[in-house]
Length: 116
Image (cartoon, rainbow, N blue to C red; front, side, top):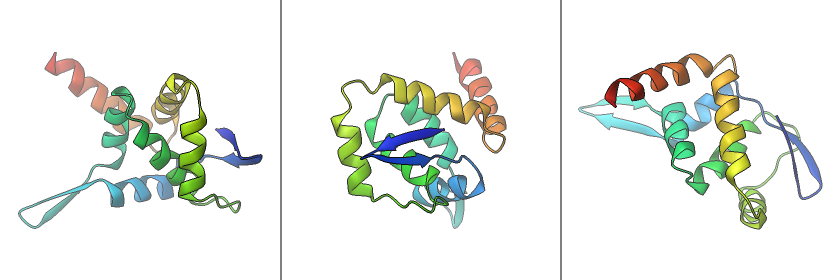
């Protein structure tokens, strides 16, 4: 997935480094055991239309890109977007189809459907 942020074309990659970045940011520690919740939290926050996750996903998706972009630059760019709905939808679509995340997202969707 490509984005243009401040005239810089950046490529978002949803691979292992992406997952590792989100897992470090979104983990849960219980009774000495740490649970990585990065992709799960990203999916839920996208469904809730929480704009903060957009910054985290862009940051995680560009972790291996040679054209580094700063968090404040990403945040300002997100804040200037008039409509965020396309980003929530596109990012969720990427999580649903990327080889490294699609299985986890499918399992989360099934679990959500069972709870209804």
